[in-house]
Image 1 (cartoon, rainbow over the protein chains, first blue to last red):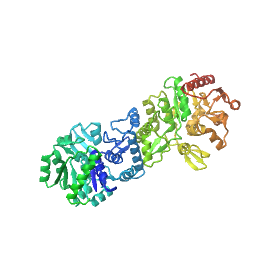
Image 2: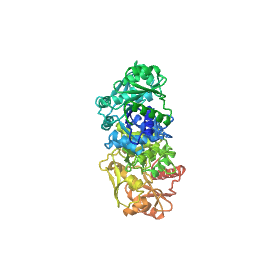
Image 3: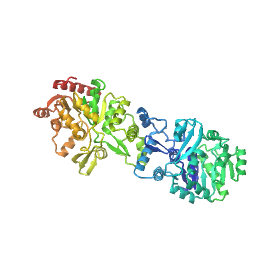
Image 4: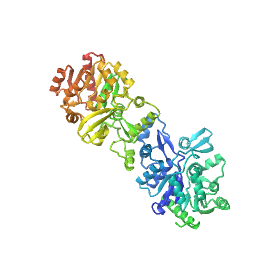
Length: 312
Length: 312
């Protein structure tokens, strides 16, 4: 099965699924729209959060980065006058150095991502949506900002007027990701930010078309509970952009791409609206408080999928 | 004044001189023959040892690297299957990342070396011998080895048959280094390995010719006491190559380039031989056990230089 995923929420969903599925059954297709280059090193926050989570290296307190990491390298960069608003730990730098080294030798982002996951003992396949550059950029009240500049550097404060996935039209889908979607017996949209995590993936035309054409059950998980984002700026962003809010607003964005949607039991109005739109709903406690909670949600999701016609 | 220097011994001599001289009076011209690239990052061990020493960041126990550094990045590189025999700490990686980033933006090695020293509060000028690639390579019983591969990777074990300074003929002297030598009122050869530290510097033709033509006193300090290297493989190397041993052997290598030589008081036969060769000798305890010892030797060196005709 395939999981389309951003960072923290996507990683948590992946962790739940890995605990339930046979080893190797899960392929995670990760957003690369929030990748950026720091000091010449390509950093892939979503891929890394998923990889660190599934290899149990993750700093569970903050949800990203490596547990017990140090910042001696970043402190030196600060002493040398470099901007250091992106919090890159020393173990994290080890991965970024390695990735850039391998890619400078000709390896693709897909290859290094899979190689890293294998070396770290990850029991799922992790693939970038594309090996080509694709960058989420935000037109804000403070002008055009790169994603990480807005997200980390500006703490999501500047109001967003428009979001662009720069490079999407020219980007070729990762061949492995495309095959994984074609062969999938289930496609899951993680409870990630649609605007910043899943739509950058779906902005790669072949990926979107292949999801749209799939006859496997396709299930989304709401990233909003009671209209609020579990983590991140989604609710604020939808308001800034004047887009439909709540779980129903998110489900509507995926129209034609999903058959079912997991919604929090308390979001009664959203459930009615989503079902009225022809999408089946499974209502439950969708908050994944820890890996055990993620496993519970994964089991419910697979049960829901089976009811929609897939044999897991 | 100018100090030609390799790594640990050169850094210690520089530290002594900085404690005695007016701020900014010392220019250290550093060997770059043992530079190498790891994971795509240029590493300059001699420049870095000098910079770390003069900024008091040095790990004084081992004489190189940053005090209290961690190795989280290197551990990740090891987990990822990369060779990790070069011990690069996390703070160290911070500098290497910064240097490569600045050089990828077009800065020269001279520029980043001076910028780093300034940021770290170093009270001397540090310059690479050249901004061009110049690499010490060793023809050994195990074949041709890059310097760090032989020095760190192979722990200096393979017997050396020949040493080559690859790139030396094409390398242009650092303009700032050349000017510093021309303007120097004193030129000191640090107690560094002549074969691996100072001769790579002197293999840049313009630097050698400018030292040879200088009318300032030029003073060497023996890296050998009782025929043994204070640190490093010099005695073994001279034996492998069938070259003249001891302090006198080293002084003879600098023939035409030095006017005076500091020798350990116990090396009586060397003193006689060096003086017979027309080079003035100052015999004393030349071992620099700590910064205070280095300062004491620096004072003696400056006194000796004054006697040779320079006013410090």
